[in-house]
Length: 60
Length: 143
Image 1 (cartoon, chains in turn blue, red):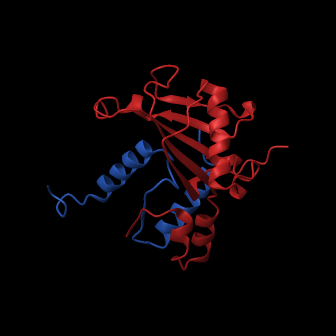
Image 2 (spheres, rainbow over the protein chains, first blue to last red):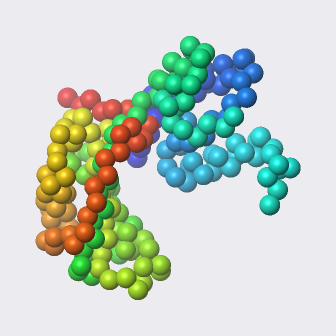
């Protein structure tokens, strides 16, 4: 199956370390980071959105 | 900001040097997706989702989806059979897929389908999509 290169996790750790250190208001979704398939991307986006806790702004 | 673009696209807008190079370190490979519609019903050797081809088979194809089987509920009223064929990925460069014309690609796909599932039909309709930097995966440099 499709997979990321060896070292991908370390690279992600570096990316998030910078985002945290620089306090960048940046959320990363899409198939570049934590799963390539459509189902991975949908699940990951949901998790990220829940983490952002935007409930009040996007109430159905 | 929520970024849903590929990492290499996001990198273009990042001023932080280290972050930009980290984002650019995630490699992407090209894919070709071919959709085929056949007039004949039930061209499938088995009712299934499709199949993947292991790399040791030295096939030009990565995998084949049996769309008509997958969507048999919604496509009940439609006639014919539909296939989605994927080529390239990590093997894109090694197979020199970039230099083939649409006709050549269709010929390659037809030959492989004949070999794999004894499909002798010519498609009634087809479409070929070349997707550059489609999926993040290491490019395979096999000796």
